[in-house]
Image (tube, rainbow, N blue to C red):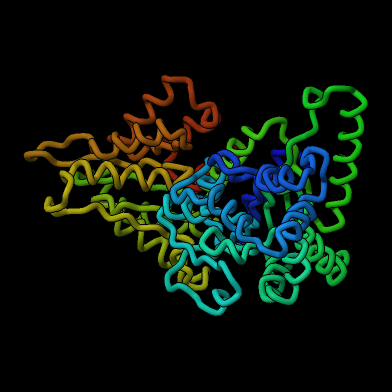
Length: 469
């Protein structure tokens, strides 16, 4: 699958709330953790096997435990030694846990997913063993299924043939839960080789049950490169095998996205995040001084109609309660939500009120800047309206709006200034037009500056966002 098509499709799944992630060992390597082969290397050396010649790594672990007369104490200790870092993180998992995905599966023992969720202020409900499946953590943002165990209980980690053979009986509820998610959610498999017999078995059973009615899933894999092999013959063989594997994964509904280097994966995820946020619009504006052209009643109606229109087009609105416009932005969105969106307020409206009392640990202005940073970070599009304030009875441009414009520029957001509303919005418009850096507005400068018809301005905003998508 082409990268652009994957970005578009997986973004849509996230927006619908049906996305899931399956993280393999490759997502933890950047945190300094070993892969499966390196984990069992010391075991193979002790039993005089060359790990670089072995493909059945589960078998090697089992041979070692057999050699130790069934005692897996050394294996448990090695798991602790290799995966015990409690604050490890990776760019890939930090990005995946920053996205509004509620379901994560992994065969990893480490805590990289948990750390990513915590870093992004999300509360995880961690399922480390079967007993955890019966308990729900209140107010959690995501569920993490650690189907092969966890560093906190290495004695239960799935690593040997015995563990895999007993898995269906000992961990049948994990199997049932994963089957259900594979049927109802769209997975992104990252850092996964698809050599795990548990997953292979589960995918096979889902394939039999659903036949041609499977959901589409995605996996990201590094393409086979000539530089990785000593001879062309070795490269050709690896390329044939990868091509066959890609075709085989289609049996399970899994489409493969190839990258030339693992460093491309964070870039792909950033593109998905940018695309996702293009559905979220921050409306920046304030007004204290009205005029004949923009009476208070007309401003109120304009703001109400704008947010109502955007919600009707399935956008999410973010507002900081801007002076003179905030309440009408909120009311327009709420009325549309109550009328057509099954009262799902949080899906279509995000509110970030500015703190008003200067009694916090930080100065009030610093807290306002942090609030602006957060609002704009969670948006893909920023609309600027009006923008004036009264200082000692004199009308000035709204400095807060100008700061929000600078933040939006720095973060590379889609900026749409409605210059016809005047004041700071016109100032922003002029700077953008003169810069020549905003080509997505080339067909719309005149409409944004002079159009008086509300509905034409609103439909223009919709056109701009859809074209950028």
